[in-house]
Length: 122
Image (cartoon, rainbow, N blue to C red):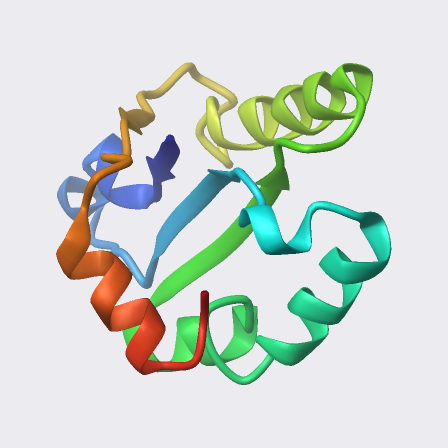
């Protein structure tokens, strides 16, 4: 699942602003081959030039990407979800409630898997 947010969800254009990026929080299940914490750290470090590189994603795609590891203790997942929800559920200047999109990710998306594999990500 992904939460998608940004100033586009609050119609900033009507106030003369232009949305600068899209905020994406991905709730990420670890690949089976990297289930241990040591393997996960290696995986994250190995993918810092691609999928998991927040600065590169922002520069290339105008997406500010964050990840929630779904393979940690439930209290850590709840804490991270609460943090991102609190950060993105209100307008920055007025603190008024605003929307966020919740998008399910298909587990059988072969096209996405092929693209990830082409980039060296399993």
